[in-house]
Length: 334
Ligand SMILES: [Zn+2]
Image (cartoon, rainbow, N blue to C red; front, side, top):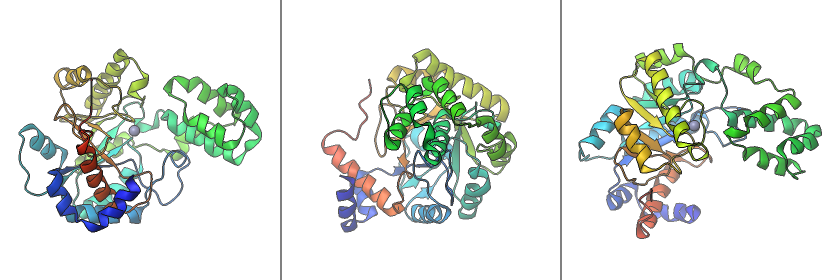
């Protein structure tokens, strides 16, 4: 479907698309960027490199006015009408390239951004379980002699490389003991990886970025998929991460982006976040889409493929028009 839309997008301008949809708030979302393969991420999704990222930002700035997250909150909260389309950039997972590569590019181009971090991973104290899976896949692809043992650990009949990798990618946060024992089998040491590679931002780097005007929000404690965990655990993930981050970095406002997505999260939970946790805005990843609350905003993933920004943006607007015919432009939340 999106391939067809990309073709049709050549015949209509972005201005026309924004006019038709009246969607003047655009929220691109990234994790990181790299010119090289990152073994802890590259088996999960395709990353954009520095040049593509710079082209993205140039295209976005041509069509949208970059605003800070506090300005975005004001626009949402006071139902302000914006004359020109606006955007706010966000980055999930708090990776080190934000400090080394991304922040200097954004400063040069005058673009504010918010970084959503996992309180349990700051200072490289622990590694997201999916990054562990990606490291396992990387190691397994280079050394397939453990295929049978991995299948046994996974309790699956999967035999060939592709099947085993598919099974590995299905693991959830509840499978961490399995992930750890497969890593042991392959001789992988996650602590050593954390120590040598330092994939996450350190407290010092976060302090520095805050001083330079970047904003930070929570992305939970250790990145579970909320549909996989109980309501109590969801609350602990939000509450503890806000408490830790506020204590460490004295954040001015509470903003939250759901790890993976907000799938399965009901309206009661959102109300608890806004009312009891003082959360001002929360973010999902369902593209251009409205939700039950004006304080929950959906973002547009820019990773996963290497299409130019123009294609991603225009396709997203066309897709919104198609969805609106079937009322699918509004998230159906219970
Ligand atoms: Zn994430």
